[in-house]
Length: 326
Length: 257
Image 1 (cartoon, rainbow over the protein chains, first blue to last red):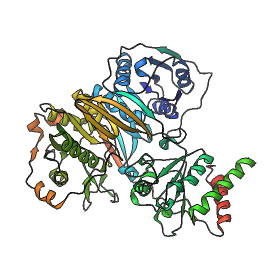
Image 2 (image 1 turned 30 degrees about the vertical axis):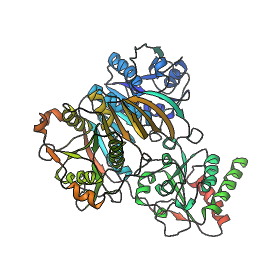
Image 3 (image 1 turned 45 degrees about the vertical axis):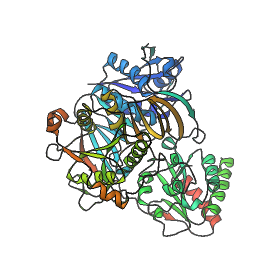
Image 4 (image 1 turned 90 degrees about the horizontal axis):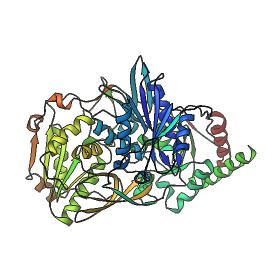
């Protein structure tokens, strides 16, 4: 029998993040005949975002709009979404494993006294048994996990579960619900945007990462240009962060972010086991390194033994060429 | 200030993972303080030095976890608590962990709890926020800076590379992100002193809990290693030709361009 699934949507700068649509697809995988109810928080009119969720598979959407929900706080969103959960009594809840998802879902699970499976990369329904696959030890291993009691609650890693095709002929109700939000104990004073052009590492389809071989902050410039040409984001190894070439927020590895882009280009990265843990499940890996013995070549699909400062600019030119010809 | 640090013993990041009988093989592995928890210990010590008070490090685990607690004491924490579940629990999840911690904190007067952003083994990042919710105190995750002035707290946190400035107040729970500080190595005098610092050992019974109270809500049904990645193609020839070949392969073979 179909389950009622709640999908918590997430917007950034007014647009829904892709992982929202992936979460809808995951909810459908958990319960193919179930009803998918979307929920969105924010301020102002959220109808358009609600419609987007419908076009991507939600059966209906509930929006909660309030001044106090303008920027995300766990307390504000927690109150709003808990109110929707109390109304709807869903049998399953899915959200993206983003900064917001990571921050919010444990609070909800704790309120509801339920289990929560975080950061799933795969969902399967085997004869009614819903099984989540998730990386452990930063991707050095995987586990399959089930919820044994209560609501099926999970967050999914961006970029791993394909969203459904958008179809704007789909229709579904988008209703707003008003929730009395109590005063918040945490207040966001300011957000300083540092991310590269709004492309987040965890969601990026292409990542160009630099290591110690990049040698300096300026050394990252060609990598930034390559990332821009490819519409991707820049990452780094711990070595590059420790050396002060770039911010820790770019770090990929066992400490730092774990990423699974379609294309990962490692430039001047030797490939310590801690770094490999964070990126070796990328779909295609390219390594550029002067040292032919570098460990990174053991996981790379394609490797160029050479100086990144010679190779990367040529690569930028070549890719620009094919883009012009395309 | 009464400062508590939640600490987990984890595999050293250098360790390769092997699986034996659907379990992670622990035999022969090196263990460390979860790296994110090290930031928590360091920050706790700094805040105590600045504001006075006491740092208590708490872990749930087995007899072996004493080693990581002693390391935290050697770094400068004042007291340690080992909640030993070895004899009581077969399995647990984040629900279990938080049930135990909730019971532990029930009669404690807490100003600040610090934890790691995630543990590098299971990496759920759930325990901090879950616990704060049970204790009904605010929490801020992935912090990179914290300043306390009386009851008010100013925090900077990392949100996917952006910096969010947050104002909040004590009592509070925070989870620590890379960039917060540079954890110290225990000094030799620190190690000597740590041997004499109080380390309390508790079992579920001492917290008025039994196995049923903390029964997990999730279950691991399988553990496996990712398919071994085969070494790919290292290109040859002049750099210009290699670059051309690479772009062509990415386009036509890998189909990612």
